[in-house]
Structures are given as C-alpha cells and as structure tokens.
Amino acid sequence: MATQKVSESSPLTFDLTSDLFSTLAAYQQKLGIKSKSEVIRFAIANYNYGSFRSDAKQHRQISVRLPLKQKNALVRLAKQKKVSIGELLRAALESLPANPADLDTATQTSIVEAMKKKPAKKAAKKTVKKAAKKAAAKKAPAKKAAKKTVKKAAKKAAVKKAAVKKAPARKAAKKAAKKATKKVAKKAARKSSRK
Image (cartoon, rainbow, N blue to C red; front, side, top):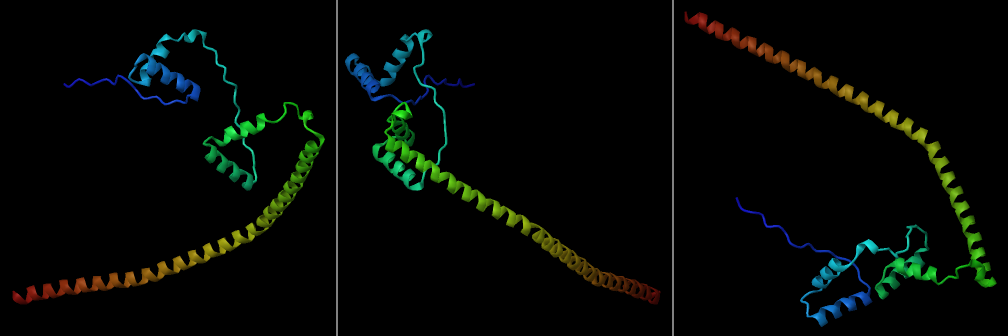
C-alpha cells in the first residue's frame, strides 16, 4: 500500500491594515526571511493568546432604504475609492455629531420636514395596495367559477372522446373474432375434404 502524504501547510487569507503589512514586510527584509508566511508563523508561535482581549466593536447589521439615485452614487464612489459601501456609510454616520441636539436649527428643521413628507407617501402607497387587494379578491371568485366551467367542459369532452373511441374498438374486435372463426372453419373444411 502507498502511504498518503499529509499536507504540511494550508492557505489562509485575511485582511491586514497597511501599517501591519508594512511591519510584516520590514521584519521579512531586516531578518532576511524568505516569505511573509514565516514571519506570521513566528508571530503566532510567540504570542500569548491568554492575554488576548478583543478591541473590536460589536457590530449590528441593518437594512435601510435609499433612493436609487443616492444608492447608485454610493456604489460609484465605493468603486472609485476602492472601499465597501458599508465603509462609506460608517464614515458618514461617524461625521454626525454624537448628540442630535448639537445640529444647527436649520439642519434639524430640514430633517424633520423630510421625515414628514415620507409617511404621507407611505400612507398613499398602503391605500393603493389595499384597493388593489380588494379588487383582486372580488375578481378571484369569478375566475374560480370560470375555471370550474372550463374543467367541466373538458371532462365532458374527454368522456365523449372515450365513448367514441370505445365503439370502433368494439367493432374492430368483433370483426377480428369473425375473421378468426371463418379461418378456423375454412381450415376444418379443407381437412375434411382431404380425407
């Protein structure tokens, strides 16, 4: 039996800040190490993970609705800056004052007015949706009745077809039986005439 070769390493991909990447490259260059992987292996082997405390902030995922124009502009900007849309949104949120009361009066007023306009649109959309549902509900019984009528007509047509098909089949069976009896009778007559 051939022995299986066990893989000694496995690829791992992760993100580094540009500062950490520079540090990694500096270690590699100054110590004359062949690859960045060796520097990473050295760092892992010598780090005390017992004292590790995560300084990462807790994240929450949310979904928001944006006008298409604004969303498309964000997508273009993210490609241009080579960052994620989330990073742009976080930067925009971080630029806001911590306390909304710190906003100037004109800005507060414009935000409040913008919020007042949107619920009116939503209410109108809800009314339209409700009306459409009611209309669809009224049409549904008529559609069901029409479907039943069509199904009944189809069943009747199928029954008629089957009856029509059975009649010729019966006639054909009778003809075949008659032919068979005639053949048998002829053979019997031939045999008796030979004797």
